Image 1 (cartoon, rainbow, N blue to C red):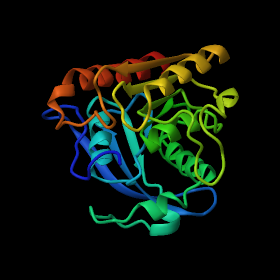
Image 2: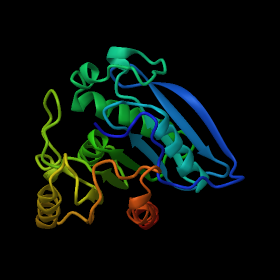
Image 3: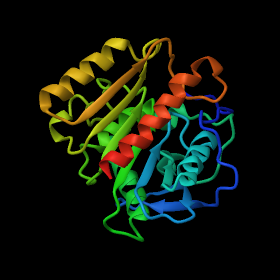
Image 4: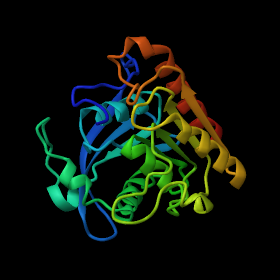
Length: 252
């Protein structure tokens, strides 16, 4: 499991920030409709971010994260994975997501990411686009770096570099020769689901391929540490958020 249904991103909201939000239904290149959430900054002049959720798909945590990005002037679209199998309606904590996770495919997720990137680029075709994902979404965020989207960078929180995608497509490590943008990895050194050795091997493989990257492991941090409820990991959360912003700024 990744983030709890009740979880919130470990980012303090900015009081008084003017943000426009909208529930979207986007259409992928294969004709599939899927749900998304768009948070627009008051004066968006910079990059855009496509947010790839954990295995639950789109829920409040990722909508709130999109708003936090918009508050600092970065437009964000958070996507759902399950339009092809579960429709586009909002879901509660009782949603049985796992059968739908098992029906996802790398091609489908790439098509949905492309549609979200196109929505962000609608006002500016030259806008720098980044992906950011968590757990299942962390792995899939890195996979998008090899999917030909023309990304400016790819960010993954506690992703699985060597875990193969469902229904074909390989792992981020398998696709490393196709990666065409910088990578940021933010990992928990005490992650019970992604062994610390994964971060080491991911870092080494990116070094070997000459991919610009930064892989950071936080001592004592578990899986899903980027949660406002985890006071004991506040320093790691704050550092991670600063690194995300610095990575986007450096690569825009």
